[in-house]
Structure formats: structure tokens, C-alpha cells
Image (cartoon, rainbow, N blue to C red):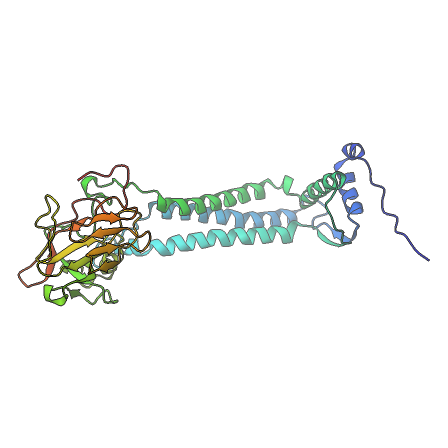
Length: 375
């Protein structure tokens, strides 16, 4: 003995077009074998005081999110963020930048989340339904019916007539999206020519400031441990990486860390073997000190660190794309995709016997860019 299940009659697409939205929503449940066991609207009588209070409580969280979003945008864009030492005026304002930006952004996201949860709890119908599982794609009739069912579900929440919630939620969501967009894009928007001849693309951390001496120091792993370099510290045919240091930076944690982390500061200090034949670049004949030559460690191809030195051939190698530069010929490229020489740092020894820089690089370091000057 067999039994068969007779499903509901499937209307044609034309018949569906003639149905009301309520009829389509009911048809969607029938076609999907959905049995609604319980469906209770939270506010059967619209416009009661209790409903208005619930609406205001939800709108409060969205409004709070919007206010926090405005605070985030204002602090992120206009709050003084440049470092101030504890002894400098304005340090207290600077120290508040990160807490204010973080707190306002966190409050914006938290309040928006609470508002969404509160809205679902207070205004979504409490429904319990059971649906039979079906495989395969839905036909045209089912798709039209489910769209109507979703629209009906939205109507059941009453969102269409809750203008206070719609406005506050729209403002909160809009400010959240705007805040995330600005936070993602703003750090990439920078005027590289700000400062004229002292702009970031023209200068590095080796540039003399107020006539203060710039020493060559090695990185020991501790920014506060100042290890200056003497000529006798390095063997012939060797290389080490050095960074700039000024006495005014001693004890200044921010400045010391910046000198070690700034991407255009690393320099390869190379000591050639005695009596090595060297070809000097015109105008840079006095950039070296004895057998010591200092070149930017930033490859002129794509900015990778040229961290390898081959003492037998006097070649500086970039491990990223195999560009090679001659240390005995003003860092001239001899192999690979790089087409420009490594900029050379002018160095000498001071009265105490330490290696110091006598100036900044003559040309911009790193990869080429449109406005790069030819030197």
C-alpha cells in the first residue's frame, strides 16, 4: 500500500502577478512546505505609549552611535596627532589622540550593534515555523513568492512607519561606513611635497637640522643603547647597516625608535680592501672616508633592502629581484632591473674619532617617481 502527498497547486506566473502581496506571501509558505506554528506580533495595536517608548529606546542607541561617529571623524581628522615629548607644550593633548579615537570608534560600533539587537527583540514578530527540506533551484513562481514573503516580513516589523528609527539608524550606519572609509583611505592621502625642498621625498633622517652633528650608529636591538661607529670597528671587505643618531635624541624614546624604523634611513657602510681601484661619481669625490663608503640600503628598483655584499666582486646585491650594484663605482647598477645608482651618503670622522654624516643624500632614494629630479 502506498500513499502520496498531494502538494498545493502551483499557479502560473500570470496568476502570481495578479495576486496581492499578502496572497503571494501566503503562497510562498505553501510552496516551501512551511508550517507556521506560532506567530505573534509584538505590538498588535499600533501607536501605543509602550510602543513609542520602545521605539525611542531603539532610536537612542542609533543616535548615540551617530554622535560617536561624528566624534570619531572629528578627532581622527582634526585632533593634534604629531608627537610631542612629555616636556613639550601640548603633550597632554597629543596623548589623548589614540584614546579618544579608539573610544569613539568602539562606542560607535557598540551602540549600532545594540540598536540592531534591540530593534530585533522589540519589533520583530515572534514566529515558530517548520519547513520541509527541498533540493534544487527554485522556479520563477517560487522566486516571486519569496520576494513577497520577505516584503511582508518587513511590514510585520513596522519599519516603514518608524521614521525615528529609520533616520537614526541611517545616520549611524552612514557615519560608520564613512568612518571606516576615511580611516582606511586617510593614511594613504598625503601631500609628498609639503615642506618644499624639505619635503619627505627629498630628504631622509640624515638631513642636518640646526647644524647638529649626525652620527652613524648600529642597531643593537635596544633603541636606548647608543653604539656609535669608529673606523677601527670594521674589518676590510665587510659591510654593516647603520642609522642616524643625534645627541638631542638621547633618552627620547619616540625619536630613537623613529630613526631606526624610518624606511629611508638604513645605510650600508662598506669598508673596501686597501688600494682598491674606485671610480668616483662627479661631484661626489669627497663623499667617502678612506676605504669607507656609505650607500643607501634601499634598492632603486622597487625599494627592497640591498642587504647582501659580495666582497670578492665588490657587488651589492638586492635579494628581491637580483639587482646588483658596484660598490667601487658609485653604486652603479650592473645587473638586474634596477637602472639607477644607489645614492651615496657623504661621511667623515669627527674630532672624537666617530663616523658622522656631513649631509643628506644628494638625490632622492628608493624607486623612481614622476617628479624625481635628475642629479
